[in-house]
Length: 333
Image 1 (spheres, rainbow, N blue to C red):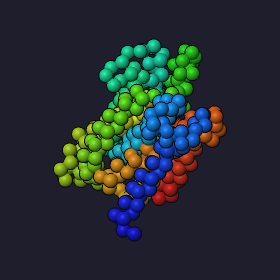
Image 2: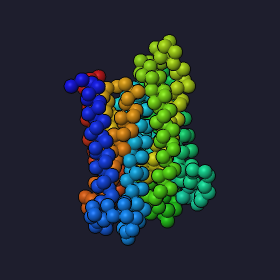
Image 3: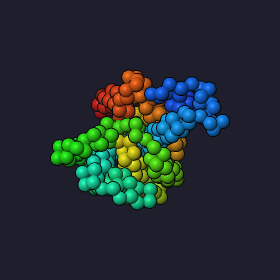
Image 4: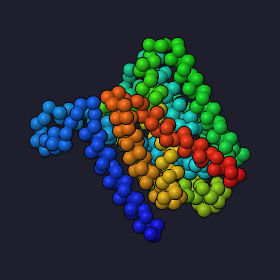
């Protein structure tokens, strides 16, 4: 099978899985429903279950898909940026920084809103941006630009953010129940407002990443080579880090910390379609959406009627995958 045919087949599989995932998400829930009831709700417009299908289950499925796409795209960007398959928003501490901002907004009792921003989402973005600025300053140093030392710095920054988050929760235990939503990752509190919040930033980031994908291909060759080929290296690097931060922080703001999506998906997609970022970014986003859509299905059905946080499901898949990648890189070195 040629590379082009393989990509088309992969795209077909993704589309079919997406359709199946949304259909199952509309069908499965605490309230038992049937396909005829779903059909009636769609076409007749008269059903007492309409609120369940389209007020609860559909926005939850869409949000899971959008968050999965955002995290996978952020992971693909960071892996290309650092030229390291171990990079993702969770491991580099971006997600922990966003969680700190969300919990801090609860601690301060912030309730203001800006166009498209809640207090939690705005604080999540600010704290993530501060953390990424620190990571970027380290990335400017040639000695650490592509080494594991940079990843360890990100992990340390994430640990610091997590420690500050724990301190805030200890200081105000009344906020713990609300904070668990961000600390463990969940879609149980989803509504349409969260869908409309994250959608424009995902679309903007995906379009920007696709526009600069050829520059990312040049960055993989090294900064000096990319510069000689006409790539404005410093500007492109800043834009990509901003996009990754934007995607990760808003994902955390609406769904909490959901780790390893940005690690598993881009690396797996790269093995199937190759390293060309002009295709890798789009395929990673599509696959990440499907992955988290099914992860959410598992989280609310495996112990039904009880739910477990979706972050637990992604960690079950992601932690062994991370160990495998780490061991493989160790053997190569």
